[in-house]
Image 1 (cartoon, helix red, strand yellow):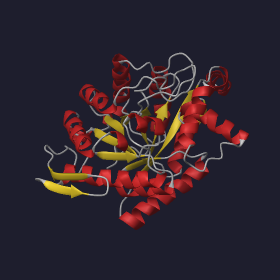
Image 2 (cartoon, helix red, strand yellow):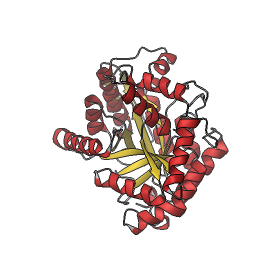
Image 3 (tube, one colour):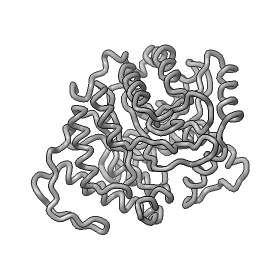
Image 4 (cartoon, helix red, strand yellow):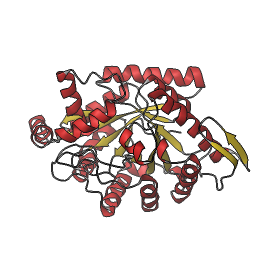
Length: 374
């Protein structure tokens, strides 16, 4: 269920939350207006990018930037953008504690019809204790969250694929006489994405996801993670899973200009308070080494650059080189973010995509088929 035939696929990440993925008070960050979402989605569609993926966020992380305190709900956001685009896959991102699978299945099928088969669901087990509490629930222990998510996916898959009424009874969900029509346009179901890096998260992705989004400190670690996840999918579940990365782009005509831009966004106006709050929330229940001052500093800088994605700082040629190296690690694609999404997408189209096309990594936008055409 790959999104396109391109050798390396690209998605825009985080346009539905304030400041996007960059934890900084730098100008031109995401403001979260509907006109802005429409403009960026249509530009990504025009460029032939594969997907538009939101962040599931219910409250922000404070600091001078009030990072992510404004956020569009992702199913309704996806429905609106599906109507406004032609070929772009539009995703919803949902934390499973926040929604019953019966409702999620129905909403997903509806957006899949609106988009003529261009909907994707990014499933998050739920790592943010404060947000889980907003729904009157208690955060489950780490591995049990994936047990819950596993049962959630079993039910939603049944709702997408089984005809007629059926009973579902499990540890977490008891749903008698379930019924769901219409089925999604995509068969057997919409594209599913997850972001599992822990052993439990990798196994969940191997069993349920078509795309798994990973974070890694460097490409060597990423290569090993890709190989391990693909091995689990093939050996335990007889499946294939595409693995994606995350890149935060700081691109300028020269390396010196790019370095200066990165220094400004991160060192001069980066929001260390919000980044620290996010990092502490993210690592609260993991075996984190964030007490090591040097390691914590590295984590904070990557968090400020783009939600712990790979900071790619350099010229258009440098950015193209890094994306090609991601592909060489076995990644099928990457999500992209920028401190300024409008300028970033413009530069991607005019300066970076032509390099990738010349190298055989991508085809020109006008040759890419939509989901409905495939």
